[in-house]
Amino acid sequence: MSFATDLSNKINELQYNTLPADAVHWAKVGILDTVGVTIAGAAEDATRILLGVSGSSSGPSLVFGHARRIGALDAALVNGTASHALDFDDCNNTLGGHPSVPILPALFALADETGATGKDFIAAYVAGFEAECKLSMVVNFYQYTKGWHPTTTIGVFGSAAACAHLLKLSVEKTATALSIAASLAAGVKSNFGTMTKPLHVGHCARSGLFAALLARDGFTAGDKAFEHKQGYFEVFNGAGNYDASKAIPAWAKPLDITRPGIAIKSYPCCGSTHPAIDCMLELAQKHNLKPEQVARIDSWTHTRRLEHTNRPDPQSSLDAKFSVQYTLARALKDRTVKLEHFEGDNWKDPATRAILPKIHVATYTTEQFPADNHFGAEVKVTLTDGRVVSTKTDQALGRSVDKPLPAEMLKAKFDNCAARALSTDNVARLYAAIQDFENAKDVREIAALAAGKGGPQRVAA
Image (cartoon, rainbow, N blue to C red; front, side, top):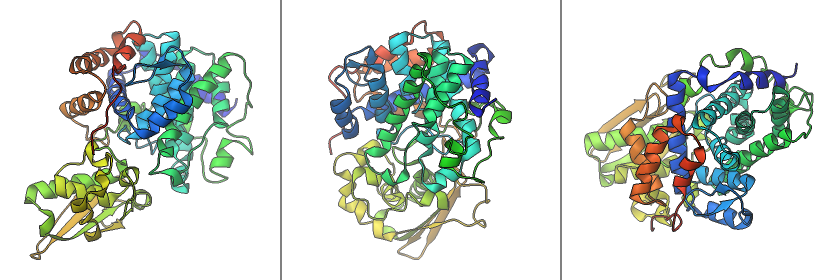
């Protein structure tokens, strides 16, 4: 059998009634968080431009945060881009990227077109999540380090797997969908800090849905799309840089959605900056630090994460989301890092930018953290009076099930995001509906609550 067929067998075996309770719980957490950040991201320029270019079709699928309905493929593209536009969406340590946004915008678009129960939707989501994460074990972290964007170069298979599952495709047609997706995988890190990064996700969500729909209707693809000498593994990784034997034996041992689980972001910026932000917030609050008291800030993160976050002079709001220097400065000055810090021209704030030259970043050593930990950070602040204060963390709050974001913080984040397009009453109704997601007879009734009346709003600069 081919790799695609082996993976498809596992995908098709996964059913709602075999899911452990914690998998259902974390699936609802992922759905809640993704719906919230998608509604908030609907107001971003990237989403607005894309909707203008690609949203002319009419159809059954909702554009989250808007009152418009368009074709399913276009909705997956637009909502997928919106879901990642703020870089506020969830992460996963196995994937080395964002697991839910390649999948859920495609599933919601498909469910709007075909209908689905809450149980079937959750099972499809978990199947797609597991497929992309176990495939990550084969190819990462080589892809991540080389410069591919794993959220999309791997996530496209999560999208295809989830959509095939919701469509109840056979093993053979699911394998075809995965093989089609191998030719649609794309995304390079050179576009981080621009509108093209969230476009990666929109394209990925659309491509996975597209692959599943094509396979459903009899489209063909190579049966060795992964392991062929010119297939996905060799082209994206190259000989010696992948291990195809890892994925299948690890399937559901445990399900990745339960461990290491979904990492929920506390801050609307690149997750690689979050452990350093946590450290700075701890120091600022514990020692009542003021910017004028600070002579120097030293920050250490993993080399893999510093490579795309060492941006001492960000030149746009999107660029600032990937600047560990900017986010540390905001944490010191404002004692928080929030959506408004990346709105309009707020990235130019003179008081924040005055702190940037004081910040010095470097990669941490094995004396600071174990070699296998690339989620930690250490921050040291030298004050003008000569005092030095420092702290470190193994991982940011919310990064794994071992350090989850408290439920009240998750709800506060959802409420803040959804309120950008929905009334207070609708925010509450949508939150309650997602809490009971598995009992939904038709997911379209839940998705309809994410429709904005006047269109989503951005916070003024």
